[in-house]
Image: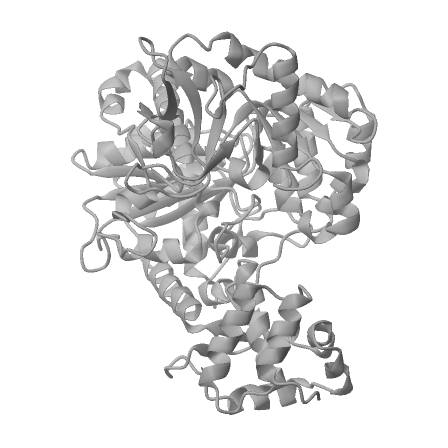
Length: 625
């Protein structure tokens, strides 16, 4: 190949925007350590960095081929790279070794890892499999309460009851499902059963972000109110259930990005039951920290929707756990051990043999997928749209797009109806602007009813562009007066973590005036549900938040959501549009979903699910399911 020095090649690729500065520095670091460095080694280092930047924990060897490498260096097309030749070359490098070596890169079967991420997967799979093999007997004394909360039925299977039994019999449980399938209601009943079984149990509720923590706390409160109405005789037990929710960072005592957690395997958490919401948002590194901090006797319950966007950092833990339960048609099918199927049939007084497939994997007994949506009825456009995207039902997408009979769906063409769309969004902001001089809690609550989401941050119809358009339109309507940076009514989105102020990336606040003072203050809702104020000068990096990215909205819900997909994304960045991206946007809406997009954008997204390279699924499901 070329005689150009390898370091010069990296600089050239960086100038050509084929790689980032981070890719270049990563490759240079390994290049300096590798005595047998050559062009192929350099290309592999770049690919490792690129895959990690795409939140993938490893580089599959099948992705290292002549086509992939030629995209970086055209001269590589002159070489033939067979699988055997690739393995031979990888084994010749001193910086690539096995799990037992001390090399920076690890070759494990058909995957190449940075050692740190190989260790994360190894540690997490070991902890999950160890917990999955444990069982806790179901107390006979709890049976009457179980049947009271989940009355026996001869109709369709009550999967919420199955989830409760699964959690009571396993120290590790995953309860998953889409929006409105009753995950939080089910968990409130489970916590009640656990409280009855162990009155002095220390129960802790956590979520990945402040928004998700506040929403979990509110959901538990509402579930308790509903259950007290339905079962007044259980009110005393119900009131003892916790409502306070923490972020995972706060629970583990992580006070800075680099600091070690206060709680870990050497200093475990003081709790008996840990409930974790929005588990799909948790990356492999944070999940390892969380499992390390669990005391040996503790029970952990993880809630989430594996169909949503995965974590913003590397890994897709919830999907790795749940995906083997999907059929080739993308439908869920539950699998349990033969013994567990018999137990469920007896406890639910139903025959489960036709609805559940037997499995020999320990992890299978720990999972329950809720599929019946109680939020979206059969005539719900939002429910049908989410399902059509999730199952790649192209004909249904087209029918929904052309059918104006669903009142909870609205469509705007980005080429011809942009002004009408902006006007519609401005109307959605009027309610919060009308209560500007009431309490901060009331203003923040009113603002949370609607959210404008965009697929991207920059560019035409990105977040920055939409924020400008909305701010300008509201100003022209006399509803805003943005004469200063921190004007009254300016919504804010925090963009970086400040552990001292307890403000984190994704937190949303509002600039308001103090009741007896005209100074602007920034008000936020803490993960405890309290309203906290800050001087604007104290705030970490932030931006105006009339609009936010779909990624930032994860963990939140709004009555009405407007989703914007710029038409140029399909032509210039088609890989950016994914099934999970659109599904996440749609399912943020509870009552109405408004789209500024083209049908081809939705159709393309539904056809392209996100695939993250990971070896965790294979490690977890090592037995035939």
